[in-house]
Image 1 (cartoon, rainbow, N blue to C red):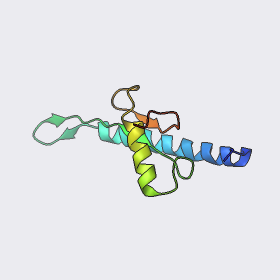
Image 2: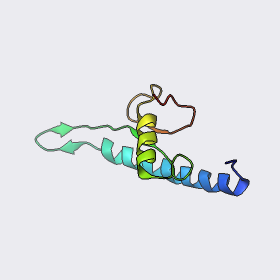
Image 3: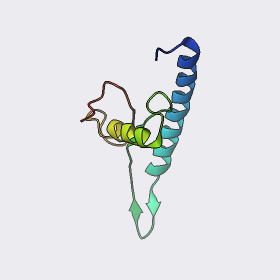
Length: 88
């Protein structure tokens, strides 16, 4: 399905919100934990957006997982799924 200007702008707004949330999550996770000493944790996130990247939870999770394990970007980051990612 070709993206119309209204569907593209809706996706862009959704992507901006997802990006903002991902940044907030990574910042919160990065905060040091003090138990018996200081522990630092990082995370990486894969993001798939409904309905563009999948219509059901299984497809969305699969695509988010593919985005998560893409070689570029390293750790402590987030990546959006793209249809041209290697889906092996």
